[in-house]
Amino acid sequence: MFFKNILYHFGRYVMMLGTAIARPEKVSMYYKETMRQMNDIGIGSLFIVCLIAIFIGAVTAVQFSYQLDGTLVPVYYIGYVVRDMTIIELAPTFTCLVLAGKVGSNIASEIGGMRQKEHIDAMEIMGVNTAAYLILPKVIAALVVIPMLVAVGAFISIIGGYLASVPTGVMADADYIKGLRSFFDPFNVTMMFIKAVVFAFILTTVSCYQGYHVRGGSIELGQASTNAVVFSDILILVADYLLAVILTS
Amino acid sequence: MIRTKDIFKSFGENEVLKGITTEFYKGKTNLIIGRSGAGKTVLLKLLVGLLNPTSGEVWYDDTKFFSLNKKEVRAIRMQVGMLFQASALFDSMTVEENIRFPLDMFTNMTYKEKRKQVDICLERVSLPEVNDSFPSEISGGMQKRVGIARAIVLNPRYLFCDEPNSGLDPKTSIVIDELILDITKEKNITTVINTHDMNSVMEVGENIILLHNGEIAWRGHRGEVLESDNEILQDFIFASPFLQRLRTSALGK
Image 1 (cartoon, chains in turn orange, cyan):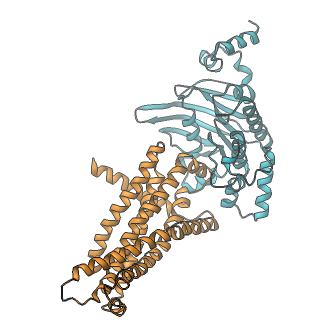
Image 2 (cartoon, chains in turn purple, cyan):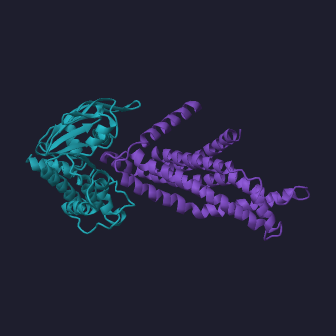
Image 3 (tube, each protein chain N blue to C red):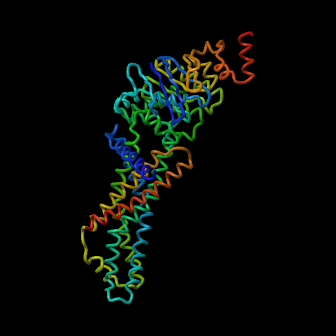
């Protein structure tokens, strides 16, 4: 029964994406909607992403300096570890887990609300491909904007690490900079962007799926919103592991 | 004209429609009436393709609806306007943006032309100067009229109205009924109205089918309602003792 259920939802999810990838009725309308979504997802999430990123960087620096205490590992390694930890793992994963909560639940509620108020039916009857009009702009916007947010998040995290270690006297400014410039592998940045794109796709499409197929009333809408966050988070973590295996092997 | 042929619809074990064969005529207000749970909304949703029948056919003039591909279905739907029970206006858009939405989506008109078309539609439903209001800022009756304006903005050949009077006072209901009747005549379109409002039946019922337990229990027009001996019809239309007395006195019995 469990696997049958998974197959049922996976099939419906794939079918929804199949319908969503279609030629727009009017490119200008889709463009306008995509821009609106970019603003909502990008600018609307910038503050929370920066806030979380600065603490991630700071905590990573503090924890690592605690672990280095009394060891022979040079202190400038703190900069190196903060940089790689945030670029490879913390910035894409944390940012997207947070965005699954903020953007994902918002998408599921928005589309689910439209379904319940018969807005989707109204559009269908007008001849609009609702799967395409409601989903495609959100996915495109997320695929463009979320990697940018992740990049900003990584940069802010590194600043967070600096603020937690240099002004507090844990290490000298020059040491932190030295750490940041040591052992740099540009592929790590590629890995960060690959993760960001995959996670962005997961969190938007899963949330759209939950909202698009909502039934019932406000309780079901709340459940759809919660499911959007929970399933997006689970799938992001699974994808994170798989990508880590694939990209580092 | 819209025709249905032997429409059956089930939800699991529950058979909601049982062999509906009927015609909805062009230039007339066609009413689907019946008690709650009779299958009216399911039939209306089947007619516009929001639901698929278990078996049976729906014809839009010479086009068999459920054998069309997605592109052809969209082409038909661009000739369809629908007024929803709760109006289904996009609440984050203004009245003007709501009515303009189909024009934005499907036409290459300039902004000025679209604005003019919106004004014509609002004028037609007697709602000038609400362009910049949001749906939540206007009354239920006004929302219905905006819904009608949006439904006719692309000059449809078929107009569907799901419970157009629900939640409205009797006076406003009559205004909405008359508006739908006038538009039907003016544009010579096929209008299908799903209602359980007795006033609508008597005011605009040019072609009526009464659904009862998923079957057509009676068909006729408003002129035949009073004199019909059909018990299900009389039970539905003249439900209260007051209305029964009214009927008796009208018939001079």
